[in-house]
Amino acid sequence: MLLMLRQDFISKNFPALEKSAAAAQALSVMSDLKTKHLPVVDGGAYIGLLAEKDLLAEPDADALACDMISQKINVGPSADVHETVALMMRHHLTVLPVVSPEGNYMGAITRDGVLDALAALCNIEAAGSVVVLELQPRDYALSDIARIIEANNAHVLSLLSETDKETGQLVITIKTDLEDATPIARSFEHFNYAVRHHSMRTDADTEVIQRRINELLHYINI
Image (cartoon, rainbow, N blue to C red):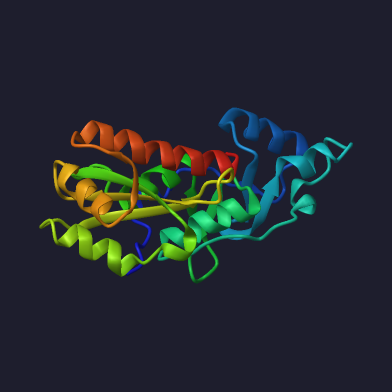
């Protein structure tokens, strides 16, 4: 099931630049907001996304900012979190405009919005514990992992995967609803899984998953 964007993830008050604004004004607004992108509108209609790098390449401070729009990227209010994060990563966006089906600007997804969405996706606030596994990509089988966890009367709340760039190993971070992950870790070791980390304290769980989210945000470069 896809996790759709909640309305409170959308910054409805994030300002958009009118198409009549000059480049100097756009740069000033970006500086105040500490962002590198700004939505541009014509009245309430979304036109496109303005990038700081394009403004800096324009020698005329009085030139119309809307003439420097290089992207029209946006998402709808019912977009899923995966799509939103993927777009921001792919295009290195600091802001992702949210646009209605009629083409009207509704607000934007910001760094804080992405963090909130990922925290919800990972059930970061839910009580439970975390187990981190390390394995060869060819050995990864979600059904086997779930079966071992469920055999311990626990359930998977979230699962994150990443590839260790140095070793090529797949690192799987699993949040479960069991408060003490020790039995789960022992079961994984019994089936010859390498357990990199396991915990029993909610604050430790939060720290591990938060670090994964922060690494992702750093990759987005926002």
